[in-house]
Length: 360
Length: 87
Image 1 (spheres, chains in turn brown, green):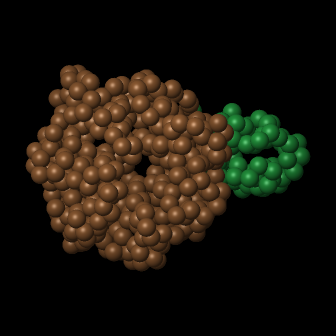
Image 2: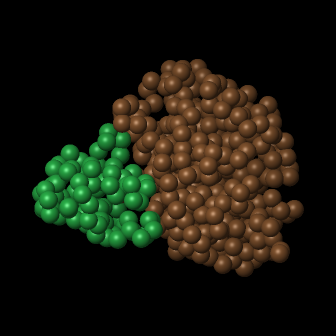
Image 3: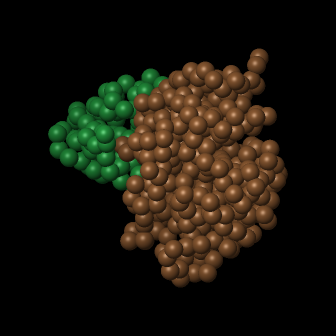
């Protein structure tokens, strides 16, 4: 059977699936799934082939939905996704979700990390990073930004099961090499536009990606600038110069070239939309020394589009395809590494996440 | 025996869950436990840590606003309402 390219689109009103052949020109859409719950991230586990969607219903709480059959049927579980009745932490949302090495990792709000080793049927709490700097202030209500402090992302090491990085919103990156038993802040070299009480934390990391071509090469879109690491996150160098703003959420690393990286700069004020109503993705091919605006096929005026942290994805075909979903419900796709774009879906609910899988 | 009326948002998530279920229970919490035994996970959809009712779930026993510890009399009607919220 020929390969299919599958996009999982998490929206304010459920998960949608877009599917194409590898030409990536004609797309068919299905959905909404997950009973219309707000979906913050939807992924395909390449090992099992199952789909998972991290979601939170305003009525019925947070859970992770699972489909074993590419979206035909779905079930939800929150068994174990709780901080218990005795503690101070309350779990309101699951937003970080990663599948690797035969298990799932979920990041919660309030900030905590959960693991499932039975395909999402049950979950157990791995860590709330109790001993980390500034941890005592993370969950004080007056310190909460509008989106609340949570753990929106987990970046797994493809080679070592117990090695991964997590983001705490407004605090920074932490690395573990022992499956969450101990942690180390990895924010050296980052910039913050506010006073910080702690040297190692207090940075607002929006999106962290690793180059599939070189696992020591990482990029991040920060609240304050774009940054690159050449040593697996041990230290960071700012690479913002040449971009229209230093702010944005989404980012993607080229699957075959360690020096190619994509971002979507946004107005850093209240708008948080693409500047001047001109839609564009920006690409570097030299690890951030220079940037090119990619806007062929995108609207150049009156397009006030926002894209959130999980809103852009890149596939791993020989000529990679790039995809992003907007806060106004459009999905744009490029089958030529971002050089040209086509709108492949519109009129969807506000989009929180886009992920892509090439399915054999 | 009490009759529990569930919100329209629940049945699609569980196999053979009807909108109205008869249960033997002395309190609202016990009624939810009985339902959870038949449809695992259902209690999580109605209760959060505490335990407490989720903020947008309202329960009425014989038309009186109730909490998890509210007693249920024989023959009572228990309405579980998903609050008018969202957009």
